[in-house]
Image: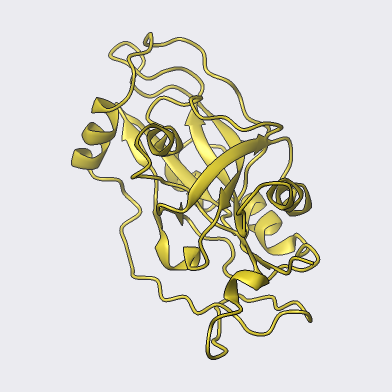
Length: 237
């Protein structure tokens, strides 16, 4: 029986997507297996079996079957993506027609429609703190403004609701999946370009999958810019 550790991010989807979003770090990861920008929410307790001592985790929610918690030590980082990182990400992506419609998400959109309001939106915080922990999992962190980025990334799905149980069910059916991250991601409704540099936003709910046991140590994806549009993350568990 798998015992999982829980981290929560906001995402909604029914299948694995590897090429949905222009500038999407998940897309980059699937291209070169070296870079990923996502957040991890749930981790199998079995993956922690070799740890020598119990450690505390901020906002931890410990399942009775788990032997100990995962220690997290997160460095402070700016929530504003750098121009250099944004340009580097765009240079690696395939060219897409500017101002073409993009898929829309199932999450709510705050008003005013800005990245700053997205991060502090009460509804995201309410859902991140209010969802129950799936059986067999631990809550490792909650309501972060960033997602996990490391080489243990296995892919992601988008979801119709902020549903950790649905997210972990997909992980349970995947080989080597020991953790998940569920979160809300601010995305543009149009492909940003010179004539539409900052389109209105849509909220994607993402569930990402991981095979590593130290994913909580790499919560460092705070989003990026595509022209004037800022992709942002909130409610990450």
